[in-house]
Amino acid sequence: MPPIHVLHGQPTPEELATVLAVVSARAAAAQAAAEAARTTGGPASPWNDNARRLRPVLRPGAHAWRTSGWAR
Image (cartoon, rainbow, N blue to C red):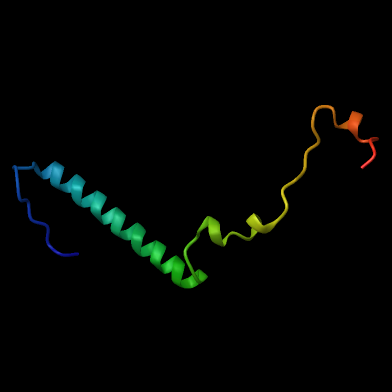
């Protein structure tokens, strides 16, 4: 990770430690996501989800029994 320079203000050591912890965690998460994308063949995306292609479960309405005998 490149060095971080404070441009404005005088943060306390606790504030700097908090910022560095957040930046490190985000970098680790991004690296893990990139590694997962490499191993699975692509990013996890709703567009790649095969379940979207399946027909949704049809649920009968409140009075479906009444119309079930009608001619189609």
